Image (cartoon, rainbow, N blue to C red):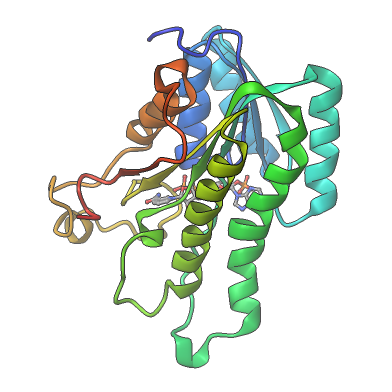
Length: 245
Ligand SMILES: NC(=O)c1ccc[n+]([C@@H]2O[C@H](COP(=O)([O-])OP(=O)(O)OC[C@H]3O[C@@H](n4cnc5c(N)ncnc54)[C@H](OP(=O)(O)O)[C@@H]3O)[C@@H](O)[C@H]2O)c1
């Protein structure tokens, strides 16, 4: 493992599970001090213990993306404890199965957007002042924000991920003289976000003939937040085995 993130301080949202947990481990192995966040304290501490017992650096703060108060209070603590950040990985998100358009409710839509859009933007707002010149933001969107799905059950999710992509591009353009902002678009990655993970069905839609692993997304995230990607800004990078083609 390279030391590509040595001496960097990285904040990760949704580090308690799936892609966020794999990325926390990867960033720590690459030398970063990783600030893991999420709502589930038990799982957060498990990830942190896994990192620490292997000789790397991490800690956990409880943070709920649906609460501005929660986000702001963690931003205040991080400011006090670390003064500044080098990396924000806006990873947390939810993917509930919603009813089709004919029966969808405002509450169904708000449940998705309050985490995937408002939560993501509020984290960016409150932690932005901590970013040094040369720092970087990586956002976790999805190929759902790029592609057209025929399922009527992902309107709110797909729209929320299109919002993450558009916000990434706008931030990259506005703040490119100080920081780099990029997004990844995972395809089907084997994580607990899926209630029933049907490898065979998913694999049949993917040119590479298989789904992805969280560690394969974490490796791309590691590259994009490292100085190896020093001239990449505003990029929307699929990590999908070719599914979005
Ligand atoms: N897996 C895929 O195939 C796939 C594909 C494309 C994009 N993505 C995106 O990748 C990201 C991570 O997903 P995953 O697959 O790793 O799913 P996951 O295993 O279910 O993890 C989701 C993470 O988001 C956190 N989270 C959810 N709601 C939150 C809230 N209100 N406040 C704070 N944290 C919250 C969860 O933490 P707590 O429960 O501890 O709060 C958890 O750590 C999501 O944005 C997802 O949309 C995933």
